[in-house]
Length: 200
Image (cartoon, rainbow, N blue to C red; front, side, top):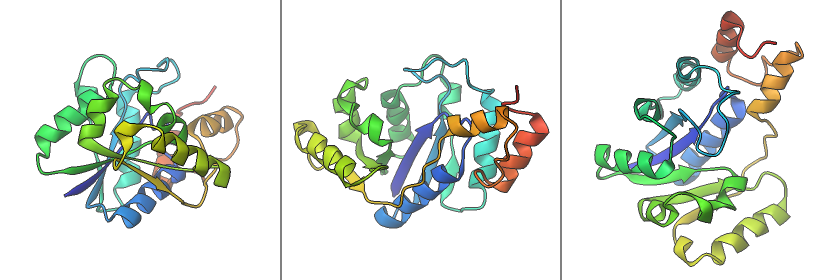
């Protein structure tokens, strides 16, 4: 079984996340994509996060319309900061025959050698990313991968249409009272309004 692993704060999940997951599904013929909301990001302050319950509820609402998308609360069940290596180790036990594809952003890809136990991660997954800006960024990603011997045969750099959207941008728009209904799934929008999330 080919499984995409898509982790992140998802604070909130938005249409860009879903479009990207679908692109990887189509390109790599994935059997499923596991959305894994991060409990406590290891390299970020958690002050800006809404509750774990709210974030995982929003991901469920966003993923429900696609039978290939699944949501995992594996990182919420584990105490402490959420390291990808620990999550993948647990997932390997759950899906011993699984072939994993780790979906990350271009900025994360270019600092992958700083990740906790990154060499062990490469033993478990193919690392997937895509260029968000232009052909120059794609060349930068390719050069980085080619110059890291550990990554040979263990990466996939996609060429997908760019969706210039971020969760922080959405949070800022909400604080300014702007309409975000076109940026997130309808049910996620309704949830944010009902719960008054991210409001000043």
